[in-house]
Length: 222
Length: 292
Image 1 (cartoon, rainbow over the protein chains, first blue to last red):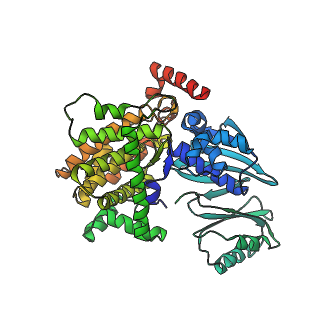
Image 2: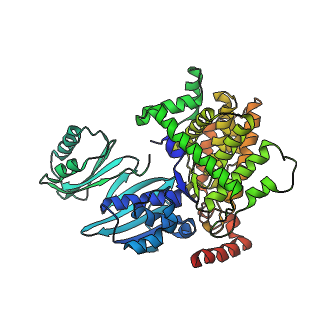
Image 3: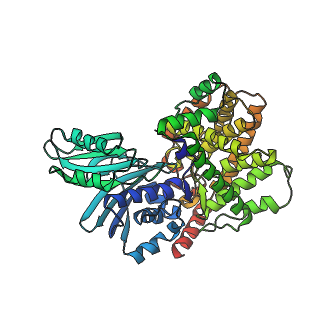
C-alpha cells in the first residue's frame, strides 16, 4: 500500500531517489540479514543501476547502507572511503539478470563472520524498494515494516506456533509469506510486523528445535 | 490510500471538505498513525524544502561533474525579463535552486522523486510567500500533493527508469498543480482539472540525462515543469475544465511509459544524452568524477 509519506519523502541526500536513497535502503536490508556491517560484499548491478549508477552515487549509497547509514545521512558522500577504513571489502560488478527484472536491481552477496546472505532487491522509484529473493527463496519485502526472516523445517503447525509467539509478545502481523524449494525441504517464512520483534522473542523462536535461523530486519522507510 | 483521484474528490465533496483532509484521514486509517503525527512528518519535510530553497538560492552549488549549478542565482540576480517581479520568476528560481542542491549531493525531500524534487517546493513556497499563506495551509497542500502522487504511483509509475521523465517531473507538476490549486481556494473538482491540465502537458516526456546523471536536462526540466504547473493552476482556478479526467490522463502516462523505448528511460541511450554534445560532455565529466 502506498503511503502519502513515501511520496512526500524521503528526506535524502541527492541526487536520485531510486539510485541513491533506494540503493541505500537496499544496502540497509542486506546489512540486517547478516546482523551488522558485513566484512565482504559483492554487489552485482543490473540494468539502469549498472549503466548509470556511478554518476548517481549508487555505489556510495549501497555501501553506505551496508555501513548502516540512512538515506538522509550526509556521510553517504564518503561511504566508499569509510568502508575501506572500517574493513568492509566491497566489489562492484555489472551483470544482466534473466527474466522480468526491474531495471534498478542489485544482487548482494554479503558475509559477516559465519553469517552469509545472497539477496536480490530492486529500487522501484521514489525511494521505495523491494527485496525479491533471499538465499534463492522468492520473497517480497518492502522494508516499510519490521521483518522477521525465518528458516525452518517444513512441518505442520509451524505458522500457528510462530503466530502464537508473536501474539503473546503483542506483535501484530501485517503480512506472512511462506515458501519452499521442495516438499520436505527447508521452509522460508517472512513475517512483516507493525512493531519490532524484541531480542527475547527472537531468542524464543530460535529456541524451537525445528527453527534453523532467525533474522530480524529493521524498518528502512516509513 | 486512494487509487483513484475521482474517489477522493467524491469523498471530499460529499463531506464538504478538502482533498487534504480526506488524504490525511486515509493515511491515518491505512497506517494507524494519528493525523497530528502525519502532519508533523510533513512539517519536517516542509522545513527541509525551505532549507534546500535557501541553500540553492544563496549557496554556490556545483555538482560533482560541474555540469550544472549557479543558474538559480542568475534568475535571482541576473538581467530582468518580462516576468521579473512576478511569482513566476521566483518559482523558476526556486525550482532550479532545489535541483542544484540535489545534484550537489545536498539534502532535499524526494517529492515524489529526487529528480523532480524542485517543482513542489518551488510552486508551493513561491506562491505561499507571494500570498502570505501560512505553514498550516502549506502542510495541507503537501498532504494533497501526496495523495496525487500516491494515485500516480498506483496507476502508473514514479520512476524515470520505468516511465520516463513524465513519471518524475510530469508527476511532480501534477502534484504541485493540484496542491497549489487547493491551497489557493480551488475546489476538489478544480484540483482534478489542474492535475489533468499539468500532466497532459508532459505526456511522452522522455528521461534522457547526460551520462545518466540527475543534472542535465533534469535541473531545467524542474523549472519548466514548475512553469507547466503554474499554467495549470491559473487555468483551473479560472474555471477551465479538462475533458479527460485526471485518472485517465495518469493511466495514459502509465501506458506510454510501459511502451517507451528503453533508450528513453534513464539509460542515457537516447534523447539529449545521445546527441554529439551530450555524449562528449558526459564522457568528459564522468572522467572528472572518477578522477576526483
